Length: 452
Picture 1 (spheres, rainbow, N blue to C red):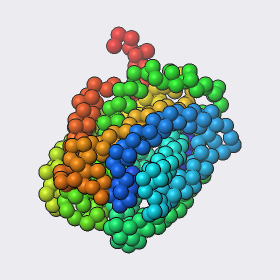
Picture 2 (picture 1 turned 90 degrees about the vertical axis):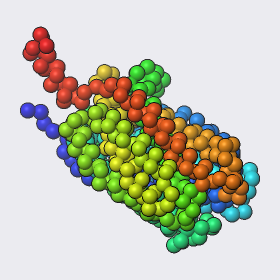
Picture 3 (picture 1 turned 180 degrees about the vertical axis):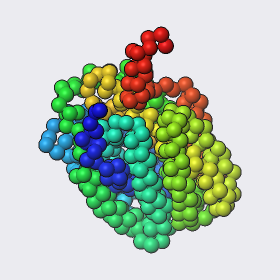
Picture 4 (picture 1 turned 30 degrees about the vertical axis):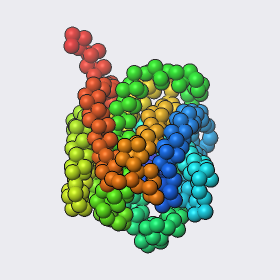
């Protein structure tokens, strides 16, 4: 009987999973509040916002593979991933605080430059953290059943972080520490979140026990490894299909506060109730979806969740007040929790197959290459916001146009609906390998029974 992997045995799932809480708080505050902070309050023009988001997405797509490759090649007595996590956490926290500390006196090019510099730095350090944190999942938990449990736990911690960084943030920034039209509350909240994030990430990294065997293989070279990944059909099918879900939810997270303000006609603080319900339903749904994935497999469950997701956007588009929006949010939360429970499991299958085929564990580079599709979030959200100026006249908080309410219904519901439908259809055609244990079992039966 094979012995359990030492890394898995020494790393409790909860200890690894709690890291998701720390990595999620900073970036979700940034993505959830950047439009409100820069466009609505400071008056940054949506066209400038769109240009910056495209530029920073291109830069981030380029630096992601390099960061992942450096992680894979890392060799130290502390492991390959942990040094990056310990160093990256305070860097991200510092940049987040600076991002929400833009002086009120900044206007025009100065405001655009401040926004661009710190948006790019925040995304770069977030990529550094998530490439290394995500690479630990298939390494620490090689069996899909264990992996599903660890992933379910970490997505649960992510939802707790989302309650804080998305649902509670509007209350803290606009009522507790500031007002609807001032910026002081954002800076204070960013400082608090930064301290929490650093403490949690360092705690997780210290407790993670990497598998030393993964660091004994020959160090791969960047360009040949990257070319090998780009030639892998699963990289494109899984990456592009998953991007449909990722971009749809990025639009929701970035636009919900202005949806509440303009589409529902309520103070931004009421986003607490809408986001809180969506996240609470998603947290509860994780338990069910994780059980379904363990019983029916990740791919089948992923396809089902993708089919459920678009219905939530339709209901949210039709909502006319906070009560009906919350009811729609319940439906959206069901589909979202299914995607949270399964999407990373599909990606992990691709990583397993790559390691088996090439004899090298380059999860950092592979996940960073997958990060290219995540960087599409920035491009699409920037273009989507810019389109509100073109089609509906919404240019900024100072120049909202004649129909900002309908504009943000389209932004929050219309665009995500189209993307999620495309993803649901594409998911039906995606094929991924069996998990390693299942593949080995199939191979053994084939050897014993060549006639089958």
